[in-house]
Length: 346
Length: 104
Image (cartoon, rainbow over all chains, first blue to last red; front, side, top):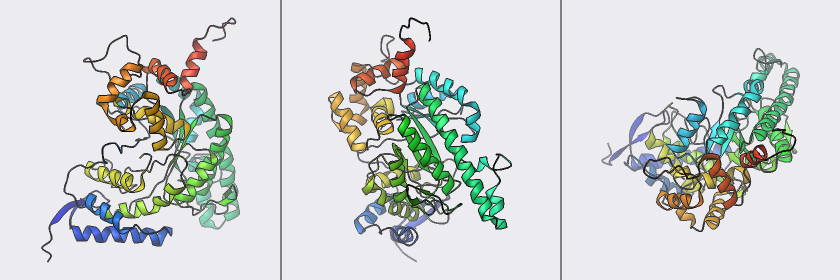
C-alpha cells in the first residue's frame, strides 16, 4: 500500500478513478509507448511527459493555456436547430458562447441527404450570413456508406467483402466515390454562390479509403474553382481504414495512412484547415490517452503549412467517450494538446 | 479565442479562408488593427477596437447602440479594414448594386 496521495482523474469512459502521481506518470509513459508501437512515431521526450504529468496530476477543477496562447476553436453543428431556429442557434453560439466560427448543417449531416436539398440549404446560408458576424461554414460528413444499398444505389461493399467478392466490392466503392465527388462539388458550388466562407468535410474517412479519396478529389476540384473558399477537412479516425485497399491519390496509397501523411495529402489537395483524430481507448485513463494522442499527432506539426485543428471532443483527443464530456477532462486535453503541439486550433 | 467577444472570429476567418497558421493569422490581424497579438484574445481591449472599426460586438444593452454596425454591416467593415475580401460581402454588393436590366 502506497502512502502517496491520490488525485481524482478520469478514465476515458468518463468515470473517475483515484491514482497517485506515480501511477499517472506510468500511464503517460505507457500511452506514449503505445503510440510508438502502433503508429511508428517517436516517443514523447521526458520534459513533455513531465508537463503532461503536471496537467493530469493536478486536482484543479479547471485549467487552461497561458494568457496569450489562446487558439481558434472550430466546431461542427452550431446551427442545427438544437433549441431554436438554425439562424437563432448560430446567433446564440456567436453572441452567448463567443464562438470563433460557426457552422450551418442539417441534423442528419450526411452528404447524400443534403444533396437533395441544396437549394434550400443555400437559401438558408444566404439568410444566415446576413444575420451573423463570425465566419460561417457549411458542414457535412461524406458518409460514403449511404451510397450503398439499401440506402443508396451502389452494391453494398460491406456485404460483398465477407462473401469474398472483392472485385465487385471494390468496383462498387469506386462507383460511390464518383457520385460523392460530384455531390461534394455541387454542394460547394451552391454554398459558394450563397456566400459561405467555407465548407467542412467532417469525419472524413469513416467509410475508409474510398471516402478519403472522394474528399481529396473534391477538395482539389473546389480549390481550382474557388481559390479563396475555405475547405476544412476533418478526419474520422486515426488511420485510414483500407476498405478498398488499393486506392491512391497523387501516387500515394490511402489505406493505412496516419495523421502526418493524411495532412500532407489534405494540404496538397487544397484544404485550408486539417483536423487530425486520435480515438480514445475507454479502458485506459485520460492520461494514457493524451500521451498516445499527442505522440501520434506530433509529426503533423513539423510539416503543416495550413492550420491544424486537432479533434478534441467526445471519444477523440483524450476526451472521454461520454455524451456530455466532463469539463475537467476537456480542458486538460485542450491545454495538453496546445502546450505540447502548438496547435493552430482545436 | 472568444469569438466576437475579442478577435477570435477575425483570426478564424484568416485560418478558414486563407489557410493561415495561427501565428501568421494573429500577426496579420494585429498589424491591421494596430494592437499586439496578445491583445487579440482580450475582450477588454478588443471591445473598444471592435467598436472603433464597426466590427460588431456582443449584444448588450449596456453598450449596444442602434447606430453601430452589426451582422452583414460589420462584415463589410471587417473586409475593408483587414483588406480581406469576404465572400458574402462581395455577394451583398452584387445583389444590392443598381442594374439597368433589373436582373436582381
